[in-house]
Image 1: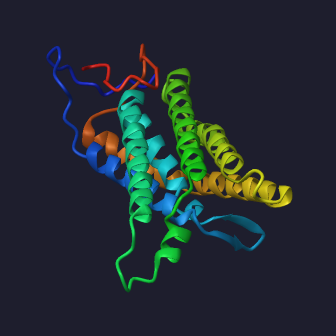
Image 2: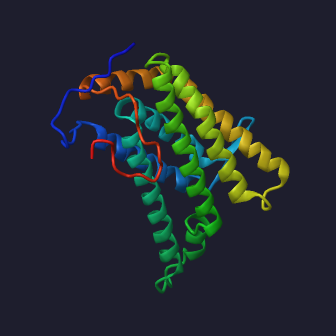
Length: 239
């Protein structure tokens, strides 16, 4: 059994990490950029997907890294940070779009077409992100305990199969059902899912490299023994 690298600390003390905040920023940045890029539906070979799919799978890789190194509770904080940032971005876009344009500025229609997200798209995106991200983190954390820290590739791929499946299905159905033809709806779901899972699988060596590097740098390899997996709890176990 792999021994967790968790040095003793005074009761109530908070662990200081070197790279946790940087991983959080990268995660949130990928999420927000993907949300904007998803306004375009594109075709690449036999696959049909929204533009955000090109970058969005990286958020699940970051999610895997966060849970594997820092544990579920700290990953949960990052998920909520991303949720808040995405909700704020949608609210600002809506507010700016609703304000009257300045005289001579003739790009209102273009702005509304790209950034004027409808409430349905916003709700679909937030619900899908929330469900998929927490499913991904929960499976990563629980499987790490079950496998005693072995077979990282099994944990990353298994969590992605479920997390990305929930995310893709919920977003496409909630956002586009009734507006896309059934055939296009199915094509977008399947293409998105295959593309996202494929990226996770191909990126497995990079995930190993990042995880191992962070574990050494942070002197941390967190195991979620006795963790409260309530997704609405924002504090970590040590706080």
